[in-house]
Amino acid sequence: MNKKEAYQKKLQAQLDQWSAEIDKLKAKADNAEADAQIEYYKQIEELRTMQKSANSKLVELKASSDDAWEELKAGMDSAWNSLGNSLKSATSKFK
Image (cartoon, rainbow, N blue to C red):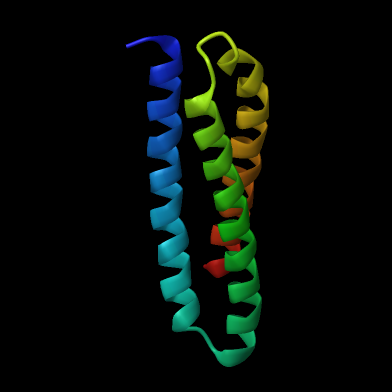
C-alpha cells in the first residue's frame, strides 16, 4: 500500500466515524425539547454539509494521480480539521 492509499483509508475511516457521531447527535436531537431541537437540527445540518464537502474532497483525492495527491493533501487536512472541530463543538453543546 502506498502513502496515498494509506491516507485515503485513514480519511475514510475518520469520515465513517464522524458520520456515526452525527447520527448519534441526531438521535439526541430527536429526543430534545422543541426549542432545543431547532438549534440542534441547524447544527446537524451544518455538520452534514461539511461532511458532504469532506466526502467530495476524498472522492477528488481518490481520482487524483499519484503525483497530484500531495497537492490536495493540504486542502484535505484543512477540511478534516474544520469538520472535526465543528463536531467536537456540537457534541459538547448536546450534553
